[in-house]
Image (cartoon, rainbow, N blue to C red; front, side, top):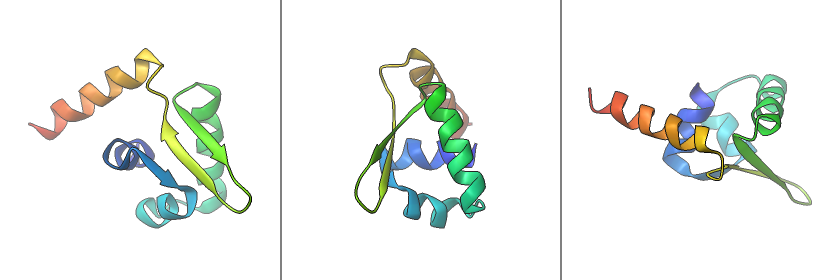
Length: 75
């Protein structure tokens, strides 16, 4: 959940910055991101030395999640 909260605020972020913001164990973070990628929630763009994570807005579930998070912030 922390991963998604950060991604909804940042839109796109490097895995190292995501790690710093979430403080999730790095190996667990990578595993969770792979799961989210398998479910087409995030896209992982792999560069030479880094990975960029961004939400996959072509998945309708991502839009639903974003709307839910926005509503929860307004409570």
